[in-house]
Length: 265
Length: 333
Image (tube, rainbow over the protein chains, first blue to last red):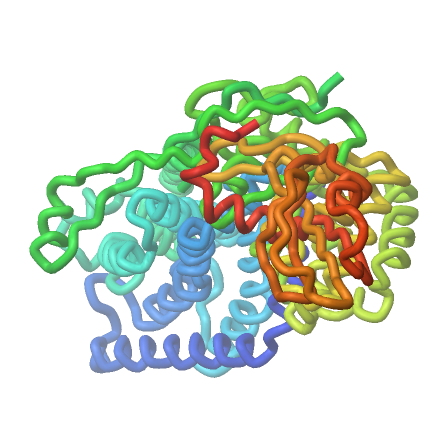
């Protein structure tokens, strides 16, 4: 069936990234600088202390490197893809094909993400690992669980970017939404400040919002900050959020499509 | 049986009214007024399998809106559209698998990839069996002369090359109907000619039904025996191109050249429009009037040297028609 076309989109997206080699070098270099800047800030903040609130500097460095795909993946690409398709009317081209547009977006951007993992994340992790040092996972279990958490993290981030992109059907611009998403993400996801440094009520609240699965939980699981039961439980909650947000995207797409076919975009 | 049937189709768009000035912009943040635009107004037609029909009209006549309704990406405000026995918008995916669409101003090719890779993606999207895909690709590559650039990225192609690739891409899955929205827009004369000849051949040899919108009458003359002409969303003419002149009431032009100026000539069968002395231009009053009728009425002894009968230029006929529309409104077929 035509389901076979979706992996082909992922592969095409992956291939298309190879065309712009300079962009790959620029992204990898940019990410490397960003990681080293974070490490420098963390080192200064620890000021020689062995640990702060029970967290050691190597743990924080590892956290900074592994806190989800947010750091490496250009989620704004989804927003702009959808936003541009709406603004220029190119979304009609997708409707002319026997395709489901959100599934097309998912497969295309998973191709982009796979490319960024291979070309950027792994090399950056290796460089930082060899120069600064990266902690091993807390246990084999935590190391293995890091991968489904990383996948959930990317899917939640993709879906949030998709939701904002689809709002362009009503707002006709995705630009302002990118800032909105970035601001929310920085604060709630734990990308800048891990939730364990926040006051308990805030940490508890943020810990249940879907954003925490984007940055905080993948790194926290890797570092063994969640025990076995909590790791499974939070993976379940993450999947629950994923289901809810996917349903929201599908509902919004149905509404957007209806608006498009009734009002012509 | 008709494979496309439109019956009293209307499409009304509701557009927000933009108020001018800063105050207007502020007001529109809180309250929006809307205006209704009737893009398609009560259009009916039926197209049989294997036909090639041109949909002609000036900018804003509702051509693209009609194509979008037939392809299922717009829903009519009232009336019905049926394509291959189905309502296109409620069966979008099934409908999409059986039609091919080319938008002259929108690309369906992947910008950064070689043309061949875009074709290969279409193989997956339309689930085309490998052998059929290879046959179609070879045939289209040779017919559209794409061998020289099929492995080049789309962004490096000229507009003419890109349009040929777009058309090939829309035909790879052997669609029953090919919709083309202004396929020759922006192309040079050579590229236009290639596209027109190819489309006429596809329609003739493979029996693919073609619906084509255009402003360019030559597209219709070379590809489509049937013309559907619209303006302001309304149907003006539906029939063979050669009948258009009659339907629009255009008259043939007769030029009589004399050896010596015969002075003023008044005839019942033809109306004098320009008198240049030795050359006199007449418009024939009816389609039934022949040159012989005119010459008989003229009689001998006028030192007549030459006679020339001109069919009205179709483009001129249509231009005159649009310009004189208010006066001719009652003469619509």
